[in-house]
Length: 173
Length: 173
Image: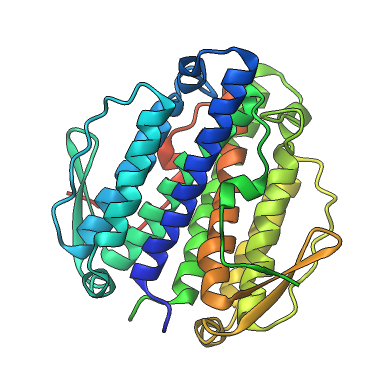
């Protein structure tokens, strides 16, 4: 099987499953320290950066919207109403299921297609499908996954790189 | 031109050029605030996370080592002696030049090849080339680029998402 755009999109499901397990560790940390989980969800790395909840919402949005556009289908809309770690885990699970449901051949056929997408409430961007995946979807999704991880590390949750990478297909030799 | 592994590797050069420009903004911030640049370079998001200098060293190492292994050549070794922002920018420039010098066809032919790589001083990992790119090189490089960005945001440097993404091939419509 050659390297493909659908394969690169599906690799994100491993990263999202990892994020879900990271949130489990955040929940256990909050319970052990008798901290309201909402404190973690509201933490930011800088006052003008988004808090943890929004980082997870944006990561999932970029992945589900981006991969849907490559597949040529209307992205499902998720309401931004999450207030608990369980809510965020449900959103991540919906995202993973959606990514797995997309037509692989349609994604693989989108390299040369112009993709149009909103940039905030007013602007719109346009990129070729392959560029959209390499230069927009992947860097942005990993940005928000890493920032979510960084917020929790900053709060004192014990996490390592393996928690971020998740169950990657690697053999230890 | 179909979607390819060499194209995905080369997309990282845009992200590294962006990091170099982010470091310019960090240097200007330090000068304006009369802060020794070494303070920024030593800042961490958590006491047991690496400081900014090491984040940049690791991001460049994973990119140059990873892409070299896909291309089937011995990675160049960079000594970890950077003490200034200018030093880090020079390392980034060497990394970008190296990524651009690699044989694209060799990278593209590596999807099914088993890649062996060190994991720390003792362990070794093995992954198929396409998995190594999707699940190791890309998530790890973006992890360290984002953490470098997050450290500088946490220090108060004025940066936005466009600074992180850099000069991506996007048209505003």
